[in-house]
Image 1 (tube, helix red, strand yellow):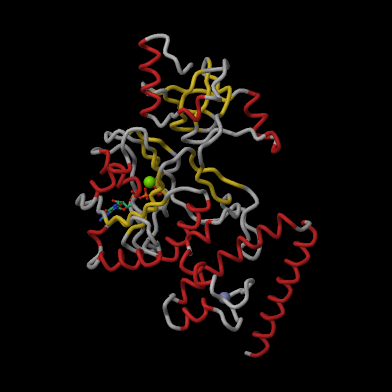
Image 2 (cartoon, rainbow, N blue to C red; image 1 turned 60 degrees about the vertical axis):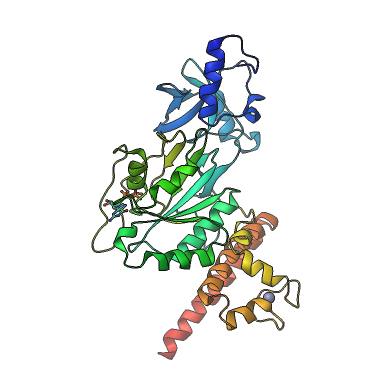
Length: 371
Ligand SMILES: Nc1nc2c(ncn2[C@@H]2O[C@H](COP(=O)(O)OP(=O)(O)OP(=O)(O)O)[C@@H](O)[C@H]2O)c(=O)[nH]1
Ligand SMILES: [Mg+2]
Ligand SMILES: [Zn+2]
């Protein structure tokens, strides 16, 4: 497709794509191998595509599969939200992503809470990420901190949605608690049950904009999508009474065209928030601590024991909750391990890891003996 329009139809097709998030930055990758379409769903090797009209199914070409499998080719395997070129129901090219929401693959973490070696891309080409948290047993400020670090690490814009407001006696208290750790991030209090606050979210769903929801299973993501949509388009499931967790009702990722004009991606609940690469997400999520750290006496201060440490001082004065500092240490450690692994030989890191494990075991034995 060219930027000059040869026909009315050409113009109308382009307008449809723009309403789906297409912009000029993608245009330069369009070659003769196919026409642009967006991935709106996937199901065991079959991709659901749209060009703004109805959706249809396609498979990837052998070349795309091959390029994605060889790590140094820069080839991408399509995910939800990707722009691709398609010809005769075959995806011939995946266009470079504007951004992607990704994390370490579940279960891919090593010892010491290390970051995952494998990356799992959840969605591409997003304008907003809704971090959805229910105000039932799902509510957990530390988990929200972690989601924030993840979203920032991907260079994406987070919006926090505290849902199930109807289930909490003092939901405003939760909002304040979250605002204290999510500096400058919009926090919306909603209820999908009685529609409180839901209209506020429409500002993120205007024409051409794509938002994706993340949160644990049972947080209320699909219910919220249905409420915003105005009818039930996604299945929802009850939360277990005994453990207070959802049962992974949503199992696939779907991009839904919303009546508001934008698109909303529903994701399955996340079990484990693992990082893949260090892109400064922790520094952004903990900007308050990072800014204090500028004033520490030692430029390489670990904020754990050094004299003249502004961070420890703030923690002692309770300006920073100790739990927040602990979260910060933990995520820093995880990301630190990753960069070590990137810079040292695998052998050396492995040896060091075993030394840590050995120390741990020794400590464990001592504790037992002392009993
Ligand atoms: N009272 C109340 N219940 C809600 C609200 N939102 C969701 N629920 C209930 O919470 C349960 C889980 O909701 P889902 O929307 O299926 O949760 P989910 O985040 O999509 O879960 P997964 O698909 O497993 O990731 C359902 O029983 C919903 O009825 C709300 O605002 N208020
Ligand atoms: Mg769901
Ligand atoms: Zn310090």
